[in-house]
Image (cartoon, rainbow, N blue to C red; front, side, top):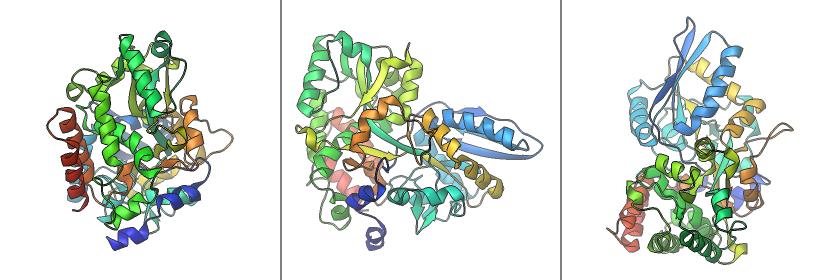
Length: 430
């Protein structure tokens, strides 16, 4: 544990060193049915397994790579997050993993960079030119022991994806800036006959997003060094603003601001509810904003705003993190070609393409880089009021699934907040 503490920057250092738009953490991925593209060629065939929010950029960039290197074929498939966390991790350990595969920044999941690289299963990418442009503050998300093991095109944020037409019809002029204003907004939407918040808690990773959106304000705005103290045994989930965040989560449910039976509602149903106007908004990661737009009659109907987790607007902080990326299996049969593809992704024009496809802030920027208008309202927070997604600095892959489970149990009324936080503290200590 002491080695982990020594190797990590504090959150204050992390964001001060980044400057400007540099923000880091780990993003959540989507759930979907597996899809496969690509066909066998006479040259090298690479196999990639990812998650759904990687499909749009990968489809575009695989096509571009085929033109650049016609002798190489990439067969891509996209599986649900839970499946990837188990099946690909098992394949990695067995030595029969795909050439390229999804990797999460940080250390908080079974498919995270730190966990996989620590097991010697990820190829070192440090000799590639793009790795030398990683902003200093991003490095803990990309590197272990000074070596880069993951490619990611940029950063995303968590906030409220909302249907502008629904807001207008309910007489809502603009996004709230405090928690009290947010509750009043939800109450107004409910009285107008619209479900304020669509929650697809049947899909496990969706359960974490509301707490992730609130905890920056309830924990880190008050104690930016919380992670370092927790790692040193001087702080805990139970004795922190995590309790306040979970109480706020349950307040939304108690006041009837969620759809009926959120534990029986999927991520896909959550998208549909907001896109069609049956619900006004969903707390989500910006990487899935394109999925919401695809389901809407007009993409311009959907935008985002930061979820205010405090009653003082000056104390509202946001979660922002490096988007889910990919790496090359260290034991892959086509390692050189797999690394060549990642090097191709690291070119600025391809960083821009990937970031644009998922409404992310590009890792590095040039004159041709663009930032989606929907995330513009988050930019003022990114300099000194943003923190990585919480699991980024958790010491193991145990806490995140426990967090998923306790949120579902809280929503079902099976446990109280005290028990939920106790279970998370126990998982953290493993």
